[in-house]
Image 1 (cartoon, rainbow, N blue to C red):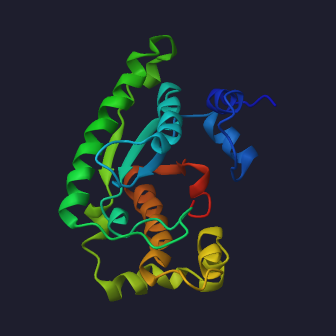
Image 2 (cartoon, rainbow, N blue to C red):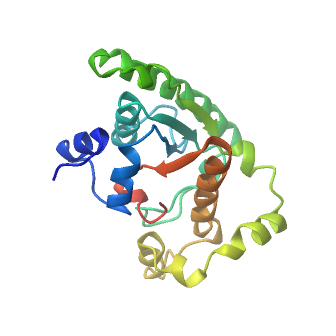
Length: 217
């Protein structure tokens, strides 16, 4: 299938599109003016992992095609842990470990995205040459929230029955020995709020991620 947008043509050719929403509208959007797209990375290690590679490469492709990438470091979500693809509760790490890993991974993100342009100079157009990536940390806007305020302003927009239908939640609920804590259950609320924050403050209209993130996306 041929798309109107060059970025979707490349992603399709490389077999990088597993799932998407509003396919026709997205193709039309990406064929027009540059858009802002984001991908989130939780600081679960001191270094980027192989699991981070595919979504990072997708973000780099958008950059090469003239769009503006936003790399989000999950300084807040990393304190909770994403239940997606996990059969048991994650062990909570110390705040010092999380913050140190966030700094280390953020430095790597900057280097990798910058190098993606250097490695493909033939794809650099005028738009791409003037599009600078943004590097943000969701701890900056999530941590100031008070618990009650977050429940009132964010939590009220989510329905528990819809959240329980997500694969990452349902599979854990079916395991009576493990189950899922309220901490991990609330992870998707924070990730959803990230998108709203980036839409309002960075003009972000698109999120990309690994297939394990589809339920959260």
